[in-house]
Image (cartoon, rainbow, N blue to C red; front, side, top):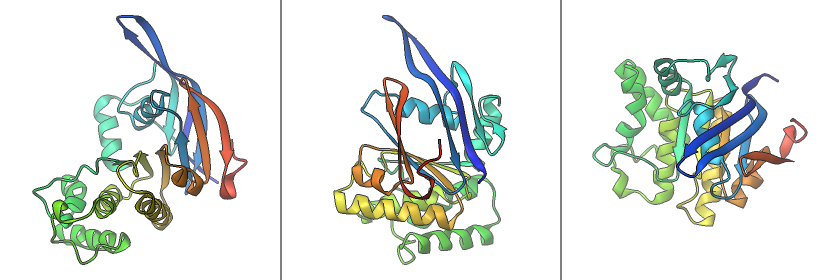
Length: 235
């Protein structure tokens, strides 16, 4: 199976008034296409720093990140920005929807920024809203939806540009347990339907249980790999 994401010997150090801090320590892992990997660890363990380095929002002090055979760490800032626009999608616990836009407009925003043809954009938006169970709410605004529904919109928007990698940072953090479990089921279904790959940082046990694998990070280093599903033994 083809590896979509390859992280090798990733280290990130920061200089602070108190001295140098190592946020990531020689982190290496691979994620094949179609797999959902949960990243667990306490606050301050390095989860967000790792997500930032994987997505090109931050650069490591050493090590490499490869996305579908292309070096993320070797790109200049403009190229990393294009990669995030075209190949990487983000889901956050705060939803990040624009309140003055309708649901359909929020989902279609990435396509508008990419200057997709209006007819194709509308078709894609309709498909994604149907995928997340909100086909009849395209004309609504975010404040008219529940938290779970807003996260569904955020998932649809993240998938708009058919990303190769979906990165989620605590996507169920603001939701109750039942809604969070439903959102994770939706993420799994959406990832499979769109032939994507997902890396999800989470404290939520239900999210971890639904993943194919769990990578546990502590003090900036991977401390263990817990298998789930068909790829349980994959390093």
